Amino acid sequence: MKTTLNLDDRLIAEAKVVAAKERSTLTRLIEEGLALRLRRNEARTRRAPVELPVYQGTGGLHPDIDPTSNKSLFDAADHA
Image (cartoon, rainbow, N blue to C red; front, top):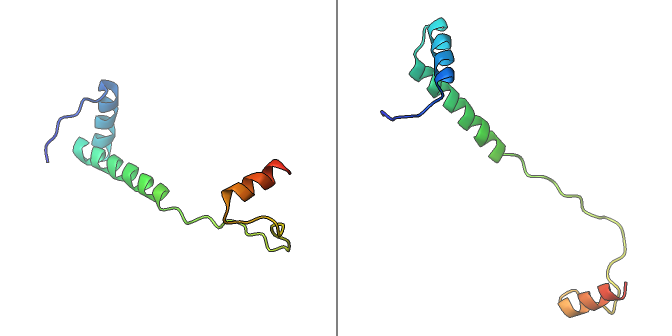
């Protein structure tokens, strides 16, 4: 696909030198750079899920607190 990009002149000049040293083309160099960036971005979004710590101790809510009632929880928090 052909497309038009506005790129920094110094960056393009440096990229042309690198491409020539590698006996490649500017297009190939840009494609490789874009592919690397997209893979890196993809790897960030595929991170393994974080395991959250779970309290294994004893205890729990006071018997007078209803865990299904916001009012009961708020009242208990106000008296803490």
